[in-house]
Image (cartoon, rainbow, N blue to C red; front, side, top):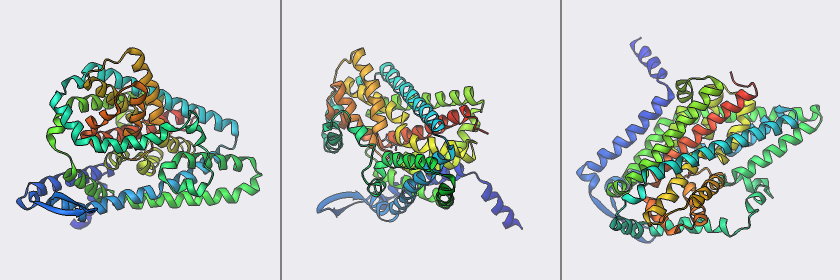
Length: 447
Ligand code: ASP
């Protein structure tokens, strides 16, 4: 009896608390492990032919804990493409009419671009107010540049490819030439979306007796995927435990973190303001309370924080927005996959702060016109960023290049990029959820 009671109490603990506990336990576990005499002892291992000095704690967590975190992220990523395909095809076909589709499409993309512009502007205001770049001493700057220039180099060359292409390349890339090829890479999410919308349009245009079985198939397929999300979420507290435990042991030295404190504060303050902006939008346009909104979306936010990937979080974002925020499936299945791919407000805000911070650290004075240019490029760069960890930093190279800021400056912000990536990804996901509530409301599809 007692046991039963205990069990039902345990079951009642809301998902976001369980995830939060998992995260905390992961952090504490690694901190304690690192602090033990055995954990802090250094050993040398051979990795890729090179000798690497690690602490015992780091070695243990890498070998025995991190793989479980990777398995968890992979299982989420695994269902992202099938989920987008099934839900978007069904979502488009359910609209039953092309003019409704284009109306929803325009409203969705318009709102997404609007929130992104606000995000970049908030970022610029914060970085100009706080002026974090001026707090960096010459020595720290040199230390950062020498420690991280190799890492920065790899991001710069990743961005090189994007830049070498012509102005219409991004548009050209929207159309896949092979759906299986597009669907085989999570970075091609936008192509999968285009295919799904195109397929959905085809379904609308054929006679109903022909489209019915196809729709029924995708309907059932969608249900299966949703069930898989439930199953994965059952282990999410353990998954985030492993992810955070690994992050803690692999984190770079704290000293660098403090040197970049004001930069991090500028990004974080901007992100907090952005969440405030969403809450206000939701309150004004849908009359839902901040508590309702934030509580409903919090498991997705925590997962975005732990995985640093909007794409991996998408399945959970969809489930929460539908079931907890009351937005109709017709809307979420259209608005959220697109949002996870193109709407990255947190990323665009961070890119604006980072670009100006690097300029400040190099003693450059950015003109008003150059800052306006950053608004445009950061908006486009965030649309072009893939929804995976660290993607925002690759696209930042393009923002820097456009504004004439030295790209090597990327090395300055490397040390704190991961924690900021975690935070901006949470904001990216929150923005998608807020916009889907607004679009839902405007079509009368919000409970
Ligand atoms: N990690 C981010 C996301 O998936 C993208 C980025 O800013 O790096 O939303």
